[in-house]
Image 1: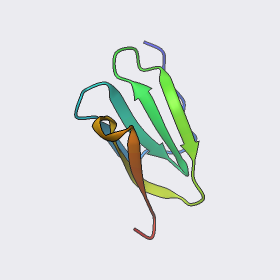
Image 2: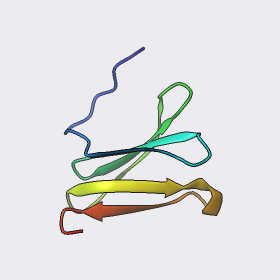
Image 3: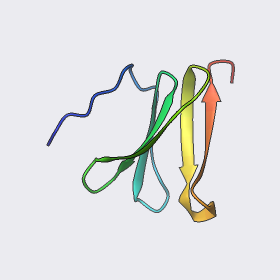
Length: 70
């Protein structure tokens, strides 16, 4: 398996309820990985340092992210 690089240590990792995606945050980026082959599906750069992120694909692929100020 290939190692995937992150810019910072991830404080939050979550598998989506449907089992299709793994959501991580590292620094100020939220990343969505394919659960089957661990390939990066999409990433979003946010304006603050993140503490956690979560996705709900059943509701239009929306996600929520929380910054260090929670």
